[in-house]
Image (cartoon, rainbow over all chains, first blue to last red):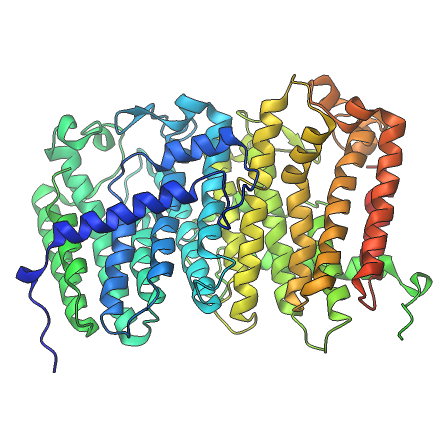
Length: 316
Length: 316
């Protein structure tokens, strides 16, 4: 029996810096007027400028990191050469879906936010019509990235990735969660309803990130199920911590207006279950996520472990 | 050598009625709170209501008909059982992309239309935020339809269909064309610039419809290239005829405000090349499309021939 590699031997900061370097480089190359095949594909420069502004803005890249960490864990059980190219594409694709959702969320008819990470939002910078189209085109680009015409990603993997990403993005995923969120302002939600809303709105795409990374290395069966459980716990923990930080952190640390959700009458975990219980819940979700990794039977899950700690212990 | 079946033996009206019956039935089933697997997939009912309103509204379904006609032509050269299930999914997927584009186009920040086919537009009926989200979810649903979890569509076909549809929808396709269209109001375009704009805005998805239908039956090589040429000619003819009708038809026949593009200062084929030359151009595109079908070497292209005539000879 293999002994799991020790966390103390794992340079998480170094691993993360290298993954982020690859992701930023790939996004810069792929959100472009030049097509995947290297030829100019005649996308209008103004539209691509809005898309690049939305994507290349220094986000935390949590979803790409989950894809790549999950791929690393899955690949540790697989022979070498196990889908690294697919994993980088999947990492960027989930980030494009996340980026498009922020662009549309910020628009006047939704949250009407004028600043994101200290910069004017896309519709402020480029106009509402361009923001709408840039978001639409970013969603399409996610599926373009998953379906390269060359042989770098096997067709079976392309099909599975498109299937998982579309379901996590659509009416039973992210878009559905946003619709529930919109309808919930000023309305009392039960803890169960709140959990469903977040499971769709943010959880589905976070979980899909983990699943897609594993699928790039061809993992299926019980190991995939364990990673799905990890993804579900992390997705929920992410939102619980978000709600805790909304009431405990100051705006400067948070990089956005603290207390905004509470002020807007949006139900949060803190408003539904209280601050102490929310903190306890986040700890218990971390424990569930780490247990799922042990259950996976995968030899090296250190990057996923470290990401679980990062999600729960973050201060912004 | 096979003799091509005669057009006089082809019941186009009967063929079309049967295809439309299948498409309407499939859209009704798939744009739903019930997932592809028959289980309730927890999409919020209000969001799905807006999606259904946008899709199940009696459009002409030209794109689904092109998919199914192209599939019929391709299947006439293939053994039996050649991807009919995939073709119906592809037909509905392109229609969902078309439907989402109309929802977003009609929004106040774009064309600000309050009526479509005599009904209030989606944002008028459901609010702007719901229209935005319904459009986003319809785009995702298109890719969900193309990636069924069961074995009804081979993974290689799923991957190819997602690749073609995403490229036709994105920054180098439909969304890109809309961006050029937005930027072109009140600006003089050359005939070449006008052609590029329409090739992206409407041509790309019409051509993709033809390509996807053929791919469902596994056609590739010269036959696929010929069908691509047919799709390019039909896509362009569709727009030229649209521009002719904008100045020659009355609003009642057209079902929308005649003369609107000209009044808005949008460049059209008629404004750039004149009415007579536009009519001649439409005829020449029809001839190109029909020649491409002869070049394809496919045994039975009658439905595609009939659709070419329908596109050019339509009066609304």
